Image (cartoon, rainbow, N blue to C red; front, side, top):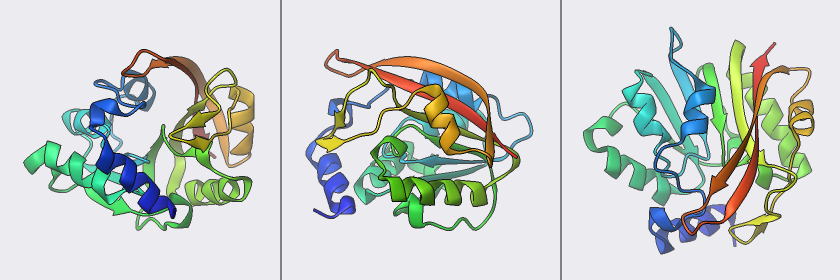
Length: 200
């Protein structure tokens, strides 16, 4: 099955609360993204129907882009936001083959990178490097070495802090890391590795 159809089927077949990655409050993402403090633009890669965007709007970000393979997921997020979806840039497509129309202060990804093949990881780094402006930040979470080997029926690659940060060097340099144990809606613990990287 083609990736867009695969993920769209998942979002069509389950309520948002039944998805393993579901979070009512994405506290780690919010902590690592940080306060807006003069920054204006943020992109959420693999946004799906995450509630991160709700908090970004509340925090005053005025240029928000959501990217996902599933149009159903983005449509659901927009329905939830209602009139607050006006002005949000919704992009359905593969981030590894996307071109931004403007630079971003922050790139956030909690959903995509650990699924990528080696060739797509190379392309992902190229796209992120061309998209995040100098001094901007890449906030990325992926399954940790002790995390699950699969997600939604697909194999994933698991990362240590050093292993994840190294992939993005020398274009990005690490400034912070964090370990998270995410609990799925049915109570299963999933270990994540997070890094914050600065564009050089």
